[in-house]
Length: 247
Image (cartoon, helix red, strand yellow):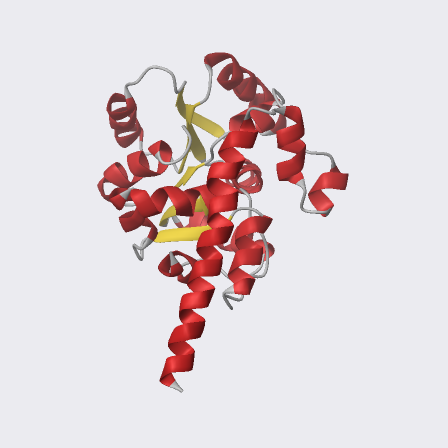
C-alpha cells in the first residue's frame, strides 16, 4: 500500500484545479483517480486496480480527510483533500467557460436526467457529447460510443473499482480528454442528494453525515476505513523496524 501513498498528488487543491483547466484548454489526456480508503483497500486485493494506481499516466488525488491524515502519518506531504464532487463541479465550470464537451455515464436514469436539466441551466456553454445511465450492463458498448464521439471530458459514475477499470481499459484509445470516476457525484450535482452542510465539511466530518443519513453505509465504512487504519499502522511499524535495523 505504501506505493499508493507515494503516487498521491501533494500540491494544493487550487493548484490541481488550475492544472485541470490548463489540461482541458490544451487538449491534454489525463486519467484522474479520486482515492479514499476504500480505493486503497480494494486495490490490495484487485491486481488490475493495483496496477492502474501505480501507472505514471494515472493522477491519484486524496479524496477525503482519511487519506490526507494517513498520508501525513506516513510522512507524505499532502496539502489538501480533493474530492470527486469538487473536481466534477470544477470541470463542469471549466467546460462551460471553454465550450468543451462532456460525456456522462452512470447513476440512475432519473438522476442523470435531472443532472442534464441542471447543467443546461447552470452551464449553458457546456456541450453534452452524450449520456447513459449505469444500469444497463453495457459498459463496453457505451465506451465504444465515447470513443467515437471523442469528448473533452468523460465522467463515469459507476463506483469503485468498476469505473476506474473501465476507463483504464479504453484510455489508450484516446489521444486527449480528461477521464475521471466520480462515484456518487451525479446525485449531488443533480440535487438528488444534498451534500453535507458546511458545519460537517469544515470539520472534515462528511463521512459522519453520510452514515447518519444512510446507516447502511456503516458496514462498508468498517470494511474500508477501520481496516485501512490498521493497514496504515502496520506500514508505519514495518518502516520503523526497517529503519532501526539499518542504523
